[in-house]
Image (cartoon, rainbow, N blue to C red; front, side, top):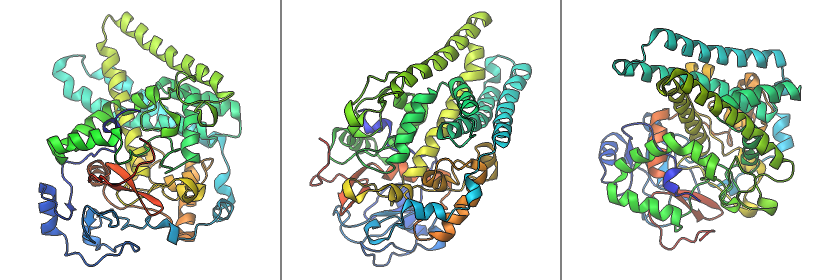
Amino acid sequence: RMSALAFSPAGLALASPLRATGDKSTAGRVARRVAPRPGRASAKRAVVVPTAVASGTVATPSGDANANPSQQYYSGMNGKALNAEEKEFPTMAEVLNKIPKHCFVKDTAKSLMYAAVSTAITVGLGLAAFSYIPMQMAYLPAWIAYAFVAGTASTGCWVVAHECGHGAFSDNRVVQDTVGYILHSLLLVPYFSWQRSHAVHHSRTNHVMEGETHVPAQVNTPDSDIVFKLRDMIGEGPFTFLNLIGVFALGWPIYLLTGASGGPVRGATNHFNPNAGATGKHALFPGKWRSKVWQSDVGVFATIGALAAWAVSAGSLWPVLALYVGPYMVCNFWLVLYTWLQHTDVDVPHFEGDAWNLVKGAFMTIDRPYGSVYDFLHHRIGSTHVAHHINHTIPHYHAKEATAALQEAYPDLYLYDPTPIATATWRVGSKCIAVYKRGNEWVFTDKRMPDAKPLIA
């Protein structure tokens, strides 16, 4: 497995209102000035945080900061996901019965329309940049702006292909896989390979050993030890910033190539080589999926070949870098950002063994406020993700209604964090370093815990 440095959740903001027991950082000092005095907290009960500071991380000193039993940090969810063993989770059939039946109906024409809109915006931006921005260093700021806007738009294409991979695009399998294969291949994503690994992610959400993507490091393992060492050396702020740069720039391709942040039981997987990683029941690409991996490779390498031919015909790499690679990197940024924040925060636990089940894992998913512009461009992938994990065949244009139904039926289980995205990302990157077992839950810590026992060496 890759070092946890490469895949521990990173931050996005330049400041974070944190207040921690004994926290002497600048953020800690600022937070102590603006946060209210903490009250007593129980390890069995979530702390209610005043609205004025709900957007930040509030730490309540419910004991020794280095002791296992205390919860140090809270998100805007105020510890709602913790102590899951005290809650009664419904069966999946019961949950699905709360969602209106028409939310499961797929409209091929409507899905194609959304795919066309995302594609048209992305291609249109590329044509406009090619026509009006000179390929000169003096216009680098304009090319950077283009990369952000076009990459943000192309994320909509990514999400449409993601929906195809889930079977939420159309009842016509040929149409669905054709659209998904083309869009994902153009974004250098191996469509069928990712379809399989992402299905595993859904089937083992927040499982500390068998999850797939963004599985947290456990304390007292080589992965977490190297992170703690670096963080101690350079300090929390510089560490989080360095983490951000590495993850957003390299995280997605490294995951595809090595399986970094995947489930420990699967070893070093590779989305382009079905023979890599574990074999047997924990194989990532068993049976028919082996041939589908090779089919996926064809699409990705065809796109790489087309990009190479473009560079040759242009006599330079610059057009490819400016028009394609820049937006591609921004698209990867959005993909990683969404996935981190959908499944990670300081007070959202992981599980293993009999303490985990499908419904519990799905309800550990977090919806967040991305705003109307990003919700439109990205088809609500971040603000309706709980419903998506309850049933991944719900089309995105029904997900808002499905979310409202879940919110009404299960107000004690549905997770929504109102924290601004930048603040939440910094909090996750700076505080969600590794997990340790507390009761039946694996919870995050940013402190070394010499006595904690990991499941893996």
